[in-house]
Length: 158
Image 1 (tube, rainbow, N blue to C red):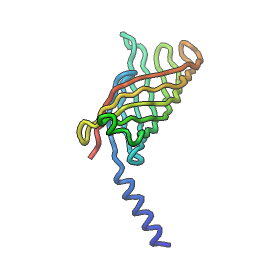
Image 2 (tube, rainbow, N blue to C red):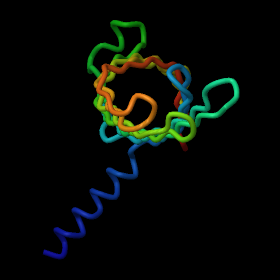
Image 3 (cartoon, one colour):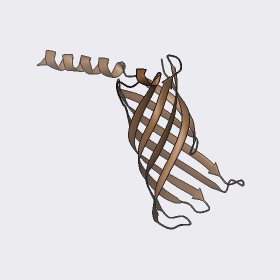
Image 4 (tube, rainbow, N blue to C red):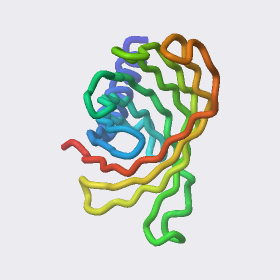
């Protein structure tokens, strides 16, 4: 029993140690910083932090985050000239402070393309769509269709 537990612990340590970790950022529908960790060779979890100051007099600040599962459409990279298409499902949440403040939730689906420039560096472009649920603020409570697009980069940590 002890050998079995030690063997499982060793396998778990090796499999989690071999997972790649990335940091990066993107611009488009807001500015984003993110941390990403591979679950398998073709899937990952991304944790994002969004910080937007809008209006020219900066009387409105929105802070939010998102957690996204990303999966590659496998077997398509060579056919697309090195571009790797991927899909994702995620949940975003945010709070707005200042004029028209409130809270929001954004469950969404994502489609994107990633290109590995060099071993540690890759770039991506993606779009997402889903219902946007807002409570409070100038519009009181509302549900609408939300969407976004961004371009960004990932740097693989050593």
